[in-house]
Length: 242
Image (cartoon, rainbow, N blue to C red; front, side):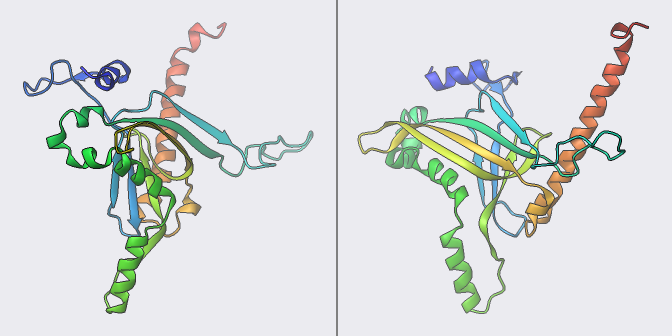
């Protein structure tokens, strides 16, 4: 058993054991995190980056705009609740390893030739507009075809289970290539991604499905908060001196 597969067994928390006889015994059926990329204004994904190993942890930072977090002055009735939403930044670390694929070269010719370069290029491309798409659209326009305008940069959706499907932009990216094959292709790498959650105003021009996601996410958060409130009320007799 490779070190990567052993790590997957240890770190994945969703242990829904499969009963399919064709599966490796004890293999967990896990929900994978992913990045869904929309390279145009059409509601059709142009890229899907699935995490082979889910990150072991994820940090989320919330920052309030300057001047929006202060309380009302003494003696006034002004509501001190911030009128603007906080900005949220998610930081995740992704591990990539081509060892398993290289053990079966006949089944993975692209990995044999290029190592991890394709997946690293796909992540790096999240920072750039597509040159190829722009050229294709320009050529189609010259021929008089009606086309879909490519996005200046791709729209990105971070998927972390059903409850968190969040439109984001890549705010920071660090790629550390850790080992290489004889042709200097990276075969082991760590990627640290900083993802800034997009609000409704920042989704102007995005596919309609993406524009609706912030509202869906906000409603989900409020429903979960209400569920916690209901549970806390049920526990009140054990907390309050009544």
